[in-house]
Length: 199
Image (cartoon, rainbow, N blue to C red; front, side):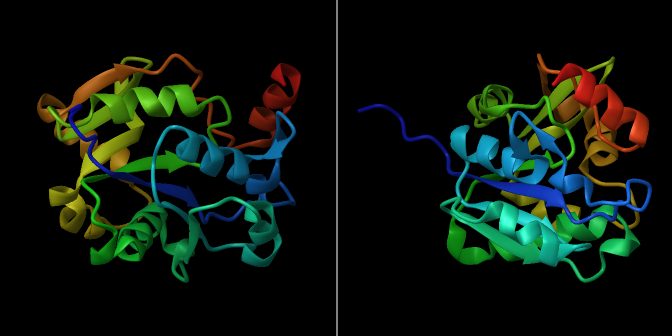
């Protein structure tokens, strides 16, 4: 019989505010879908289950974008203004003990070119390595798959520093997988203009 694959959950970080945009950037459309839905669907297609989407700012506007996606749960981060680390913690707490997962795929909602193929490459590399991260631009970062034994440590992170800096401190333990897609983050109006040019 083939060896059973470890069960990997996904945590999609989508709680941040979008003060520079005048609209929630989670709802910017790329490929005909809002970014937050696109990220959650890509995690599902890559084989992650369950998919936890962490929301905070503009939650009432963003929630409808997730309607109809099976096996997607929403975790609310009331402390989203305190930084990215609180969203990561909220996602890990939402997983709970009953989900029986071996690790979590950490995904950012504002990386539009990261698709299910890229995420599946990370999941496929997990097992022999307990830390798997994307490699791009001479560094490593998210998306990444992090084993459950690190969840407690990740939950203690503070401020606007998420899993990326934490992974870079442990670079010798990390299996780096080249990210074939652009890691472009949509952080500024200029980024959004570039996305529209490439869409």
